Image (cartoon, rainbow, N blue to C red; front, top):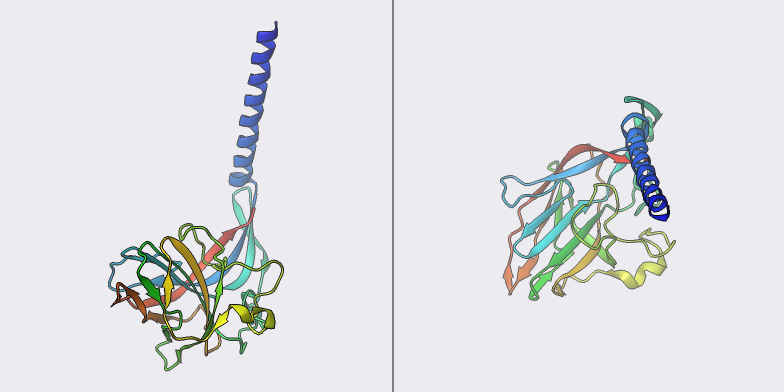
Length: 251
């Protein structure tokens, strides 16, 4: 009888797992799902190659760069019930706010500086990169240049599987990332000297520009001007950022 009971137990456990997975799938397809909706700036390069992802990831030789502005705006949340969508939180456009990760005042008329995050990895041991070597141009007479940059640990262990709204750099405990905090002074630099990069290591920089954040409903470009391998300057194509929408699945 013992072997039969053992088989029955295994069958019941297997059946319970199948039922649980089926229930989760049913809830996702036909039950309740919640999405946050954000306005974001999606990256592109013309002409291409090299190809670039919407989150600003591009590969140039052994170097992988992710150049992403921190200017996403939360616009509301959508609940999906039984296959139908209905907005249960919708922010009025006049109340739109920037992400609070680097801002103190998140209003659209904020005077907080525009922050561009850079996640970079190089497979070549003789690579140098200058975070201050950026130029932003909105095509309407506004040009932004770096005032300083912060070196933080990367939030991710890889440059893949990134989304447009989760910061690339990692918070330090519960400390805010607001750029005027004295506690952050040991991570800040205003040097224009290129930084040597170690082979197969991820770096994350938060580059503070001398202009306020640009609304993601506007188009602009970012040019990377100082990336070198074996002493040779690498030409990085001009990256264009265009208005886009991103839905972040919550549950």
